[in-house]
Image 1 (cartoon, helix red, strand yellow):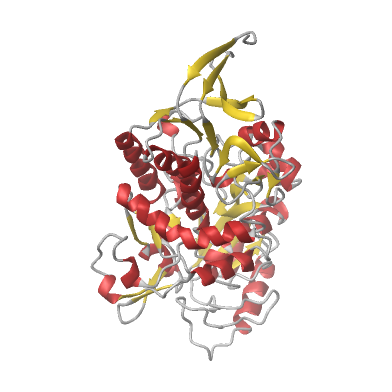
Image 2 (cartoon, helix red, strand yellow; image 1 turned 180 degrees about the vertical axis):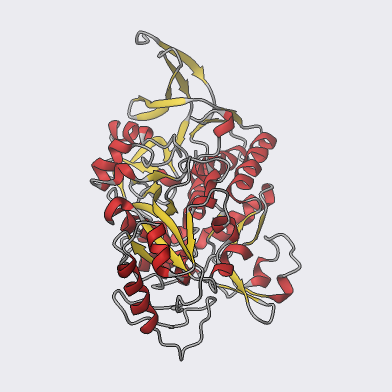
Length: 496
């Protein structure tokens, strides 16, 4: 007998996928090519579809043997003959995950990710997704007109995150997957310990039951929920800017926990980056999406509102530091910092980010005048810049394509790419903390089967994407989030 205001529906599909980003659609494709009848339920309305994936640059980290090995995957480009793409092995990938997470990555999930990300992209490419080399993000043009890619992250979607999700939608239509928008899935249906469908809250408050043989959860983390951020990430995180979809509120994480699912991964950390501080509409912006990031910071310095540096901007390639620096900025006075560059460095900044319409920027002929414009103490900022400039080992050539060891021996040290800020005008870009996704999620086996608190699979329930906990903690290597969505979305959909 149904509960009041609850409508039961006969089997709606063989597989229900909850979510609407890269992982959700990948799972749907994997189930559909097996001949399964798939229903994908997206919480957002049609004009806001795509989950967090829509807001990304589309960068996806895969292991490969260099440019020749990528030719079958990437779109042609006249720059290819002038380009060097260093091989990036599965062992390199594994080491990077271990390094940036301080060894807190799940080794079994990691092994699957590093070995299956490349084949997963090739499979999606065969279905219709398009990829390219990301020149504007992962390589600087050298004086001789050639390009050297760096940081292990080389491939991305044509059209960025927007292109990624429109490609996914076309594939879903071709495969016959039904996509329903505006679906507020709020609970799971269970019978005899098995998941048999979902509960969907209707606009009038009533509940609709949709039944299936299995359910794949791909509805993201809790980064858009201020209360859960404060509870799990700590005080102050309620003030972070939400970079991506406003619909990732953790509702399905809680629903899974309610039926006995185990937590996986680090619920106390997240992906957070430097984000434009003062541009209006700087959260969940569908037009500017990833252009609100500020990721040329390894070239200059970052100071807080006291005019002091507080991180090693050149610790590593930005692919390995950008996802943790947002947290450091959140901890600064007012949760605001400023990226500082001079006129010699300004042409090297990423055009799509630093020339963004309405960008938060100030410029002035001198460092002291720049400080006055942004409300900093002129003497304090001048001292920071002078100490930095005077501590640089100028005998080492500057080369942004490699970890050049050009060091500034000040406090904190800048390990690479230290260049004197000496040529006016000077520029200050105001940044704050932008939260991308939370690292804690559900515990699963390597096939995406959700495990209960005793370690046993919950029949009929799968997880992928940002809801899958265990791969990342404290930090992550750039591009591995979309890669994980592909790998474990494909695995979940292949079994569901």
